[in-house]
Length: 131
Image (cartoon, rainbow, N blue to C red):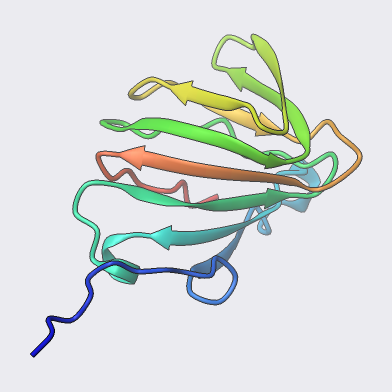
């Protein structure tokens, strides 16, 4: 008898836990849709958490951090800027990778004219800001 395959192939738009962030204060222009794909709840992951966030043009995340976790981001589509707690800005474009050290405050901003698709991964598992 063959053992069941443990490897999962997931569709980010069908298999993820989807949620909207930033709806409580739309005047801040921090609305974005998050697709949590690799989590303890969705696949039983033990060490990483990953998904995709989509930002409309002009939208941003809040300035936030993930204490105890390092973050890696890959820009799948679009372009923008990442901002740190001191207001420093660095531009990014499609195909770029970002590394955010443990606990570093950061904000992603879509400065382009098309939706920004950002693939993110935290390790060890972090938490997603509630805003």
